[in-house]
Image (cartoon, rainbow over all chains, first blue to last red; front, side):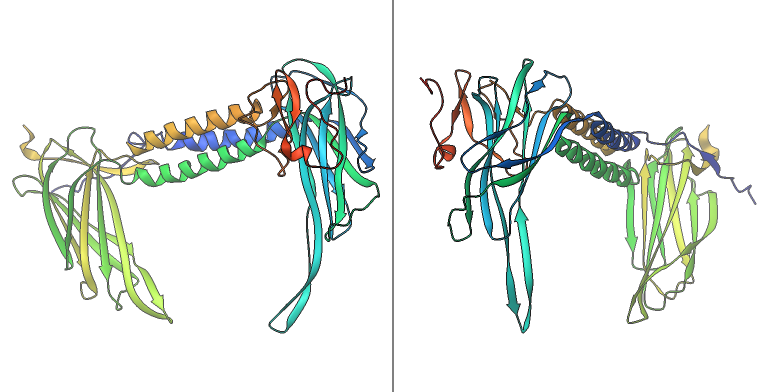
Length: 332
Length: 76
């Protein structure tokens, strides 16, 4: 009888790289909050604009700033089944247009009938926006010009249009920040999943039975060995199985033999179990480097269809894990 | 290790999007001819281009009734 080696919990094989994308994701959230706090509202007003006569806001000072831009947000108020094309203009003090953007806004509603059912629908697209950045500080005048205002039939409407205009300074473009947030978040999740498959696969053997035996040259000091046993079982799968994992050295001497209880994940269809799958993950450090044999045996074996063993060398972990250190007697 | 690659890619994405967002690369830059980075918000299309530092209305803008002409020499 030999002394059963005790597992020791260690964090020395933790891979820190998957945590970097998470830190950056947190940074992007912080950047979004910081960006939203940075902007300053300069003007928030309603403007009544007659067709073909641009209405102007009071002059404001456009400064060259290191962060953000001047943002002009415009929301047109029109009745349903009307179209309005308006232009947001940035002018200099002489009234010359420095920059402009056109928005084709509309609001429509109607009724629908489908398979005996009916109802009404209403949709609109009235918001317009222009972000402007300056290379020099200068006073500018923001103006709204209605270029075309008509009903859906194309008949012109000769009435003023009401606009809500909000001008902010130091506005950060959050479209980039959201892209960055989702990008880093996606990479964070991917990076988490890569950790369990880190390292070189030295054994990947499957057997259509309740046990599997394999041997490979592996191990060394400071090399983490990840042993995964996967069990596929049939419709008579119990809720749990015992997996006995044995490790032998080059001389066939048994270094480790332990029975682990694993839960079976059972797939069900119409309330009946159709199949089961279970997995066991254990970590070893094997010294010295040499030929090591692995044997996994599943009990009770009646329902077991297939047993697979995967051994990875130079494995990494996300969290501290329990590691069993085994020393072969023919080391020296 | 794949996790290193993902970490490097995440650093690149964060650096690019933070720089572009905070320096407002998508904004219209006054008096700059190259506006390739302009990214419209709410489908608001820029209605002109700079020629020698002067804003010249685009054909889209000129097609509307109220158009009175613009660009260099306008109002002379």
